[in-house]
Length: 130
Image (cartoon, rainbow, N blue to C red):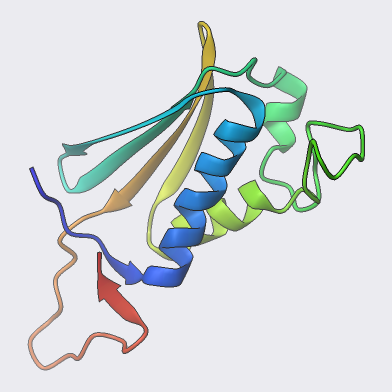
């Protein structure tokens, strides 16, 4: 089934790329699945990595927070990926939920679908239907 999300293509792309890249950085495999839940699209990005500690999970969306603390650029970025992803989700009226799974980790993105444009309104030029 197809779903339509109206939004800023660059921010939406960054949101999903950050989550997928994190999954590949900390796991070996990443799976992406989506479904409709009422008026929302629910997109799960699941990896087979070790997950995050509860302490790290509480700070995961804080700018410049890195769960991987070696400061080695080959094993981690500067700690903005999840903060940027959450900001993009919120800008589109959505959210991100993080959860450890048995044998992996899940980032669940929830975004509104089929957002109507009111009669007489013009969608913003920088927003597209993706």
